[in-house]
Structures are given as structure tokens and as C-alpha cells.
Image (tube, rainbow, N blue to C red; front, top):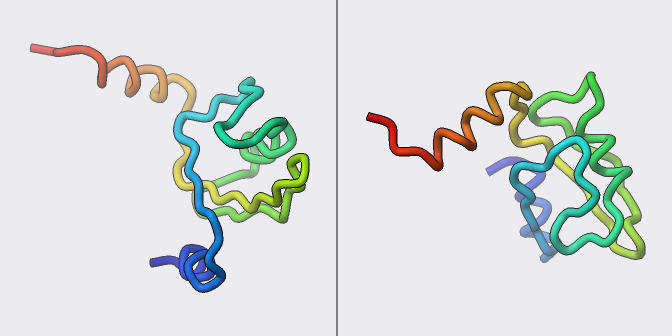
Length: 87
């Protein structure tokens, strides 16, 4: 378990995960206006394992971690492939 996850457990914080966040998304479940957070995640220098500073999203304090980075083309194919039965 990472130090980030250990701290979540120690401090009894609420951990949420957002999968398939796209660059132009305006929502993340449980957050009302997360655009600044999404822009941070899609910064060109961002890589797997990066941890954000604290974001104040309308009274909810959020610290984000990049768990995976996928190239635009392969992300579409991966999602499509999971919906198809290929023979």
C-alpha cells in the first residue's frame, strides 16, 4: 500500500476513485465543479504517481493522484474493445 493510501486510512478520510476522466469532462461523481482538478490531471507534464496539492472544490477538499495515464487513441480502443466480443 502506498504512503498516500496509508495516510487516507490513518486519518479516516473518504477515498473516491474516478475512472475514465476525459480532458473536456465537467463533472466527477461527488464533486460539483472539478474543472481545475481535471485541468491539473491533463497537464502535459503529468505522469503516473503524481500527487496534487489540495484543491478546494466548493467546500470539499480534494487531493488527487494520477493512477494511470493512457494515450488518447489507445484509451478509445481499450474502452471499445471491452464492449466487443472479438473472435
